[in-house]
Image (cartoon, rainbow, N blue to C red):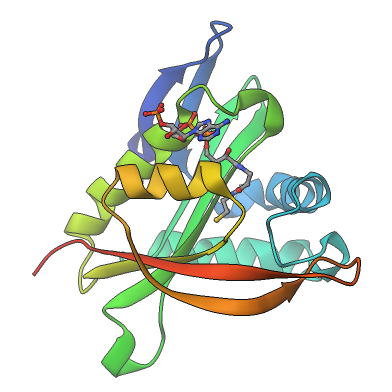
Length: 187
Ligand SMILES: CC(C)(COP(=O)(O)OP(=O)(O)OC[C@H]1O[C@@H](n2cnc3c(N)ncnc32)[C@H](O)[C@@H]1OP(=O)(O)O)[C@@H](O)C(=O)NCCC(=O)NCCS
């Protein structure tokens, strides 16, 4: 059961399902691990392969605890009827001179895409980032072919800062480029 203080928003899907968007806690580890493996299996745009999710339950719970206890980290989950349907994770860079920035990743399960959930989660994330101590710049890396995600980020004012050419193997003998995007959230 989610702590009420961890619930950021209740959003209703096209089919009328109530989706709770909330901060993750260590007890979610038993669901975030299978979630990650399954999303990596069905989405071609992530660089990690499902078999590269190697942390065990305890390590995942520990990582989530770290997110929950650090005001400069965020791990958001979208959940409906006990099922995880979305995920956003942000971590600041560790070295002092670059710790004003950090990287996030977002995903929505296929049957909840294109309904506005990604937009709502990103909105909550940016509201959080404006207040997060020390965080000034939020960054991401996106596959150059992932037009849906790039359009979403641009709508929120993220700018393209660079390209990494042929940076990711498509595992079929080809290569794809990566776009580096970022948004300055406060001075
Ligand atoms: C990218 C992703 C997070 C977006 O979430 P979503 O819930 O599907 O997106 P939304 O429904 O909130 O749409 C937000 C914006 O995306 C764009 N968009 C949505 N569906 C689109 C489509 N099929 N094609 C192109 N753009 C699209 C639109 O600009 C939309 O804004 P609008 O409603 O003002 O038109 C989600 O689709 C996803 O998890 N994809 C697979 C994993 C992934 O690519 N993650 C990002 C890695 S960097």
